[in-house]
Amino acid sequence: MLRSLVRRTVLAGARETQAEFYFKYVMPFSDLQLRTTPPLIILDSVRHAGNVASVLRNCSLFGFKLVVLSLPEAPSKTFLRNCIRHTCVKAHADAEAPSFHLVIDSPPVPELLADLRGRGYQVVGLHPVGGEALWTALGAASGYQNQGSRPLAIVAGAEREGLSPAAVASCTHLASIPAVEPSGVFNVSIAVEVACYEAFRQASFMPFVEVR
Image (cartoon, rainbow, N blue to C red; front, side, top):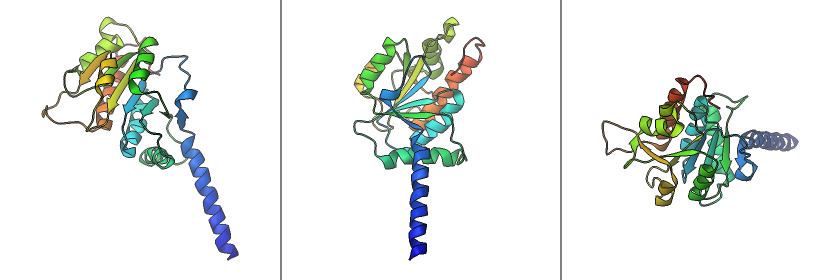
């Protein structure tokens, strides 16, 4: 009986330590200090933990280390834990997680995008129809075409719903990813990862631009 009690206590302590490890990578929006203008990703109503995890892991490699998750309801602790856990498992980083933060409890996306535009951000919405080719939209948004640099935010919606009309209207640019099957829909994590890579690729041709 004593052995069973000790085992339960050890397991409970391990779970608590693991939870602390996961949740130190989750940040409430109220704690986000945008004194600088780092590149941002905004996920609008993306509810699949695997997709969020993939964006966190892969886009941080291209300098996008802040991912704002906007949901109409407060995300559960289980969902948030899964977002970080899947990221760490996929990155084989059990001892040390990748350098990123998942930002939660943000204002509604249209309000958030309006605030970012007021801070000088160019907001590129990933939209399957009506947008420019991805590289053209990102080039215009980032200032690459004019040999300049502007703060950049990339926003994407869930696969089925996409961006809301209000979110679309709040973007400065709309971008679509050309494909052989134009009627197909990209997985949201893949679409965001492709966009972040293209932004990084364009910035890499400009040695005076710092990708943060």
